[in-house]
Image (cartoon, rainbow, N blue to C red; front, top):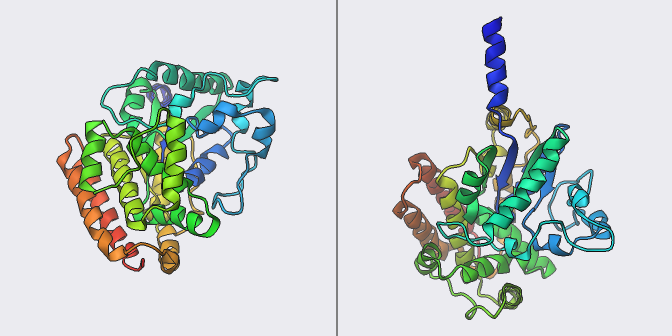
Length: 356
């Protein structure tokens, strides 16, 4: 019995104190986060790096709910409900947040803003810990900074959410086609453009033959506006090349080492895989999310493929090959992860073949 008790104490001592979900736009990361947020022992922070937090007030919190076109799951509380503890009457903005946090970075070393970013995220985590809860932070703007965050938050469980690029892109492209929402088309141009001087970003931009908007204006906000204008009339194949370029940059950082990868394509097809993921979260954090209701997102992409217009899908095989070549050229990526990405590109070839 003493040995059993000692092992139990050791197990508790090694549990991670937070969960960082590193996802991409339209990756179904919000659904994964919602499964964790629903647990009694978790506090779910939605998009801690979003520029929306700079102007957030109590009224905006209440209004931050899924729309009919978002594709997000129903939520018991608004997206940003957990940030109310970091808001103050009469002012706007989440305490500690800076607009500069909202643009992902792909340099090898942390930038000048990182100490402030680290302090801000630590504050979110400590607030949850004081309540005896595990903070679950869901990011769409952290992929390039995964390694910075892993070193700064070694006590957190870092999880990468991976979905094949064709499905992920199509989700955002159809929103633009049907509802004139260019955000998800513009986002890769914005992130790549603001990182174009980083050697890693420059390499993938060239390999994928991405045509970016003109050189960045004076500010990040001005460039974001320029990219939205650019996205409204962007040639479809170029928009997809930009998306794949950003996707594989994020995959590379993920492949350098995370504690767990959530394969969204597999999750909706295999109950065994869903159960294994649940066990993986429980082993690292003691949180036990139920993923059994995951939809088959690959089949959904197949059914909607004929609706994707303005892109020659057959011609996209080249960009998939270029992205995989880029990943194979990098050091420090696990071979099994490279094979997983290769499988994603094979699947993307199949899914894009019906685009016209």
